[in-house]
Length: 175
Image (cartoon, rainbow, N blue to C red; front, top):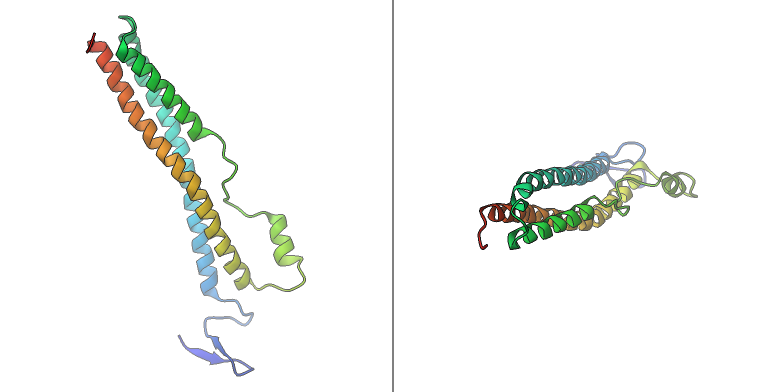
């Protein structure tokens, strides 16, 4: 990149405009915002999947469970009921409202830090600080998302096992 000497003889990047703002930093900030938005969409998607899991579990249990329980309670029926309870507990865990997600900034904090403060802050400095803060927020959010992802995977495995237990109960395997 070409460098231009400034008034004091120091080198200043040609990408900076007259106010000292660097468009590269603005681009990086926009990419950070895009990443945070994608992370928020992932959380919403997982909530939708949890809702689908509720439907699938209810459908399978009502369809297969009614038939299986018509012959009384056997070991497969008890296993299916226990798995149904476990799936329910995992769905509650998935849908429990978490308030530790960070998908936006506090406007009051931003005003006090960047507008009402003693020293002037350039847009580049703001974008840089906020991009780094977004990175930290995304890492914190990711820890919660990972736990939810594992819970969803376990719940889906339990759903498959639940369906199999109901089917085994219907054909009376082991009675």
